[in-house]
Amino acid sequence: MVARGDRVESFPVERLKDVLADPKARIWIDLENAGYEGFHALEPAIHFHPLAVEDCVMDVNRPKVDDYRDHLYLAVHSARWDDNDDQPILRELDILIGERYLVTYHEEPTRGVTKAREVLERRPDLLTRGPDHLLHFILDVMVDNYLPIIETLQEQLDDLEERLFRTANQRILAEILRLKRGMSALRRIVGPQRDTILSLTREEFTGIRPETRPYLRDVYDRMTRVSDLLDSYRDELAALLEIYATQVSNRLNEVMKVLTIITVIIMPVNLIASIYGMNFVMPEQHLPPFWGYVWALSLMALVGVGTYWLLKKSKWM
Image 1 (cartoon, rainbow, N blue to C red):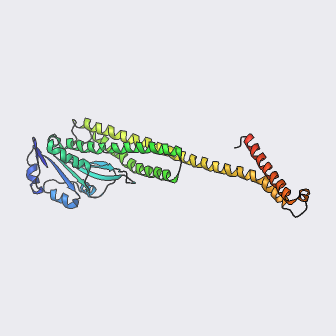
Image 2: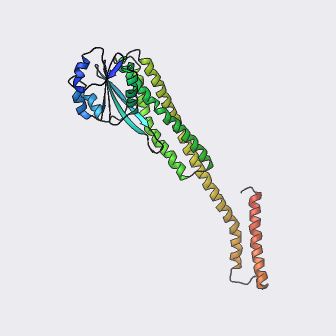
């Protein structure tokens, strides 16, 4: 796409050299899964550093910024985390920005690029004001897409905390571990991406004009908020894991307590049954069989109730 004044139009790649000849033209080229061939098609008009092209085609998997003097290379990541996904979906977006052009490269459709394409048709000033202004818009949309993820994480953490205090089971543990893995994947991207955006706000790169830097600082502030919230959620998850371990330990202690009480009550009863089961004559055995059974069972019941009363009085149960 090329923007001139108040209009935006598409053009074939063969006309790129002629379009660049117009000093008022501002160009945006979006390459989706084009590979090396896509960059080779631009070479007669625009020459990129081989390392920048390689970083675009190969997944860097880490946000970064490289300055090649006449153009700037930027790697950022968009994020999507739906309820049905165990892990967040991270998609790399590579950006090459020059004085009068912006080139975006991605393997799959990206919401920031799609949104920019839709808005650009209504607002040509996004590009006519400079490629760095369009860069700000894409980064701004990308960071905005992180915020719903953060809100969803907060809701899921609150729900897990309420359920965990009611009961601790394997399903809750699986959900905690799933969130922990997903948040770790996000944190590995958000931290470097925050630092990458911060570098754009400084006077390090000539491709970023001074009037655009305040807008990029706003993007950096929101990215910092996302990073800080992820750090706090990590601490909350660690606390939930400790609560889960405590709940399981307490439940195990309660079970052991009940089993111990049952054992203590049965032991004297079992002792009486063992004594009366010995192979010698006891005084009570001269009684009629019925009253002998009554005597033995009554003695067992009396000892069992007495043991229970003693444990209750001692507040051991």
